[in-house]
Length: 370
Image 1: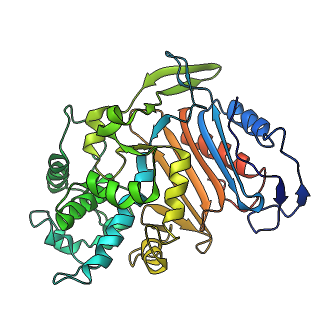
Image 2: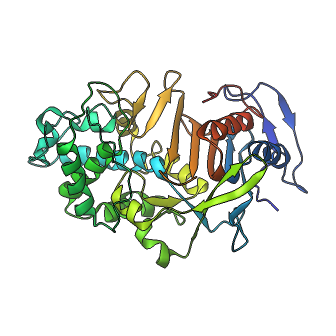
Image 3: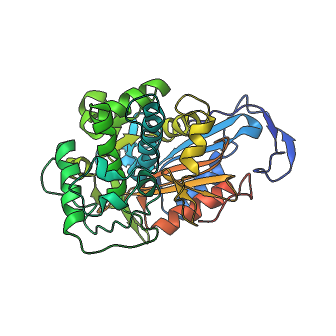
């Protein structure tokens, strides 16, 4: 059984549609994409949850496939199943940073994207040469090969941020171009803490989760009280499925503050993406700041996502080290078209991206293949 939310009228006229126009009656069976999506998920041996968004038909079609937890016979179609956000959380951290920058304009100590982070990290090597914008775009030069390793114990936010500073100071590596590293966003989480005098988790609840009513989005340490069920991740080998069961350890989740340590669902993540540009989280100016940072590299990365095709497309891939969770999001800039795919069983990142593109091709040819 699958869950669908589809209306009858289906008008393919937007640039993200293939151009056909048709009417369909879904009053009896709301399943026009369920069968082809199921075939694609099976083809790539994927388990997880898919949310397809097509504003031309006022449609949000969400499908769950396979087991969320095979041992306990829990299925991904269950709306209470939660998935690690992995790097999809970075855009939440970035949005909060933009909020704080703009709030500071009315204080005696304003900050901007160009403020050097030595202001908050006086002991960080080269902190005087790194700006907030460079953290937001992964162009800080920071290279930390241990930025996503289980530390062996559960850290507080303060411990995780200080450990990040220590790792950066101990590293001899540095680049002068784009390099994707969790440390950039862990440092942003630390700035958010220092500027607001409350924890990153409290900021997330106050600035993102509550305003958007994200009932299925929760920090890792609140899972027990939330009541949601985290999916177990698996790997598929050839015809064999649900092998190597793994979950994200509390130790790892505590380590990557602001860079991938919450759980969510495709539905909630869509609400967040739309909240970025409908004035619930950011206004028009704030969204422009988020997506067009001064240090944005040629690949279009800014504020937690890659922005392509002259700003018409945004996308992000998420993965947690030593697990099999893989998330892939590709949306139009207004979040009215696209896909949010959370998988808890996969073979590779390429398989997840290919499956997502084939699903998108069911109604649009305007999205990237990877």
